[in-house]
Amino acid sequence: MTRLPRSVHFHDDEHALSLVARLAATYGVRTEDFCRHQGLALRDITEGRRPALRELAYIADIDASRLEARATVRTGGYFAIGPERLLPENLVRTYHRYCPCCLAEDRRQGLGSVEARPFGRLSWLVTFIASCPLHDVALISIGKSRAKRLAPGFSISLFDADVETSKPFPQTATEFEAYMTSRLLGGRPPASDFLGMLPLHVVGSVCELVGAVTMFGTKFDRRGHSEAEWTAARQAGYRLLSAAGKPFEEFLRELAISTRRRTGELRPTNVYGTLYYWLRGRSKEPDYDCLRDTIRLVSVEELPLGHDDDVFGPLAERRWHSVKTASKQFSIATTALTKLLRNAGAIPPFEAGVSPNMILIPVAEMSVFARRIDAALDRLRACQRLKLLESHFDTLENLGVIAPFVYRQKSKSETALYDPDELNGAIAGLASFPARADFRPEDYTDISRIRELAGCTFLEVVDLLRSGMLPGTLLDPSETGIDVLRLNIAEVTEVMSGRPPNTVRAADYDMYGRLSPSTVRKLVEREYLSVVEVDDADDLRRADLAAWSIELFEERYHSLYDLAQRLCSDRRSIRRELEAAGIEPVINHSDPQKALYDVSEVARSAVGRGLL
Image 1 (cartoon, helix red, strand yellow):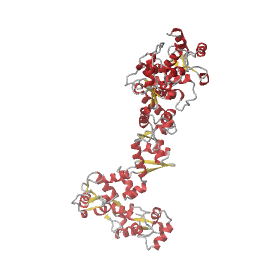
Image 2 (cartoon, rainbow, N blue to C red; image 1 turned 180 degrees about the vertical axis):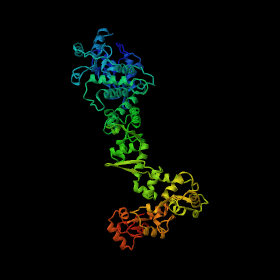
Image 3 (cartoon, helix red, strand yellow; image 1 turned 180 degrees about the horizontal axis):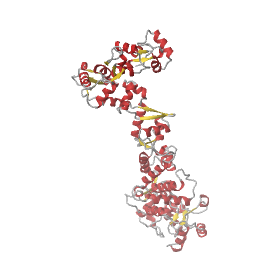
Image 4 (cartoon, rainbow, N blue to C red; image 1 turned 135 degrees about the vertical axis):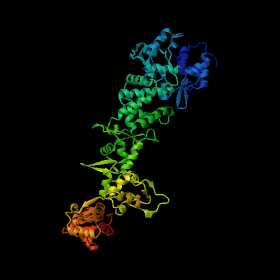
């Protein structure tokens, strides 16, 4: 292989294929014929194979490294131009894209034969560049049908005639195109710059996509816009992404926050639209991983993602729930969940009409809240868990010992819900210490029994516990509910002995109507009620009854009316069943529904199963 006697000047911004075409034009032959005569493989030059490029550099008498820096070198699924990488779809690997003004100037001012003067610029090969920076005109693309009539060189007469008669469309070259051209020719910004860290094809794509989002909306049709519109979109994206800091992350964050105002689901596909679909379609191209990672990061930090949402794959963690995603995951109606969270103080009282997507709750807090809701007890079940009568439950609630953690709205009323762990903790908080190793069970008793032994009401016992006057009270972990409290009999008795007794005048005691003297006498004689002081032995209605005995009496004995309500049955049916079971009232009454029955006796029968 020998050097050509006549060569051409290789320009700094010229690509390798242009050099081949100009050499062929110098000798007045077609490019294919020239390569065949010289033993050059045109396909190898097209794909930038080093042996073919070195042979071309030798016969053209130019530096091989310069030629290799301007060749499109196929490397795996990419084409490299110097240190930059582009995808095949980013390149126009023919001679039929050009600036007519540049070719006309080449013919007038270039060196060598007129036929070999026009040369192809490296930037003309890149689809992201659509304007000429020297003449501010749009690049012209020759369609395939017309290209077949033209030689693959720049200087065939028919092609030159087309150049002379073309009327280029004015189009100002953009900063984006200048940036891309600079990098193609070897200029590279600092690695700290966001765009500078990305391969060139990623720069072009992300500027184009981000600009399209700002101009056309998140869900745009890539085929529905003109080249001039795409040029403007790339410039818009470049202006945004060339800023200092983390411009892509900030762009995504603003997009995510603005999208939260919508009422629809905030899936990544809805938030990022075409940008997301485009990146997902290139999941096997690692050059885009940095963009996908940023979207995943911002999505986790800013979006309330549902349990079945993914962002380019499953998520290891989610940071936020919206009321909407939480409603879907935990199967609680959106409106109901909003009210529950607001009543619990988990979210502020937003104005009416605020989208459920705008109300954010940390995932961890929402999971805890949902578990509490799921395990929450209504009033009846809370009483059963604590083994308390409703009256005693009311006492603890009025004293602030226990409280609902949230209210659930039902039609026009609210239902209080109680956290079982909070209930247990509230009861345990009344005791001073857990049971010790030297614990003597015979010295302690539960809160129900202590009232009779020490002569005090439930309220008085709780008041003593809360005031710290019963430091000997222990916790029995083998028990549940209120029975975990083990009170020292001697300690409570001693404290109560120093207090005046709590009494109720028998005449004022009205359980189901005023009690007759005979009824009071009967209750006292049977030790259902305890007398503290008697003014007139013949008239016990003037006696002072111990308040604790009245409290225990009302707990242990219920009227037929109360039993029917608690058993959710008809009074007559309950009475017949009790008679059939051989259970008689402890205290009869002229009105059968006011007759009193021993609750424990009824509970042991089939009639009152589950009563206690």
